[in-house]
Image (tube, rainbow, N blue to C red):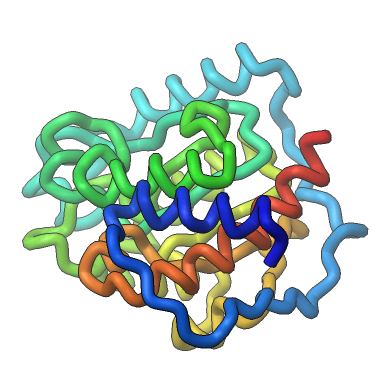
Length: 238
């Protein structure tokens, strides 16, 4: 690792709440064997204007906020559609809202959300520069994983968001997000082992921040994912 990368990693660990660091094997850069630079995001029917995109998202949120397409509406306090830059080059997709999100209507505002904000800051990405949403828009009871039928019910909403925002990169947070959007089953190890394509968009998979809060040892792997993502993000935003 370069001196800059080491400093950045140490800052990431500090922001993540790790105080003591023990060195063993060096961190190895994850390979990304699937070249996707020549691929382009799918065409969209919407205007390229930021204002138009923002209005489209607001209108769709208004249309869907009283959705009864699955049983999750029964425990809904607030519909958690998504937040961020309507023309973001990077879109993050988690699993579903938690208690804090259900109370506020905002995505990733609890402890996992605070960690996610720090993770983005560690690679010099302000949170308001990206767009963040979830596979399902209503909280599953007890924060359980969304059921397949619940994911299917919400998937059209997510696909519309992707179509409007037209991101150049996707980051799927957790196994549920990866399996739902990529349409395949797998482990986090296999999902993380290479990049993917979703509708022509280069797609990364990494650990959900809530999983990192439960398993501190996984943060070093999430850092590898973030470093690789940062390189792609910097290349498209420059």
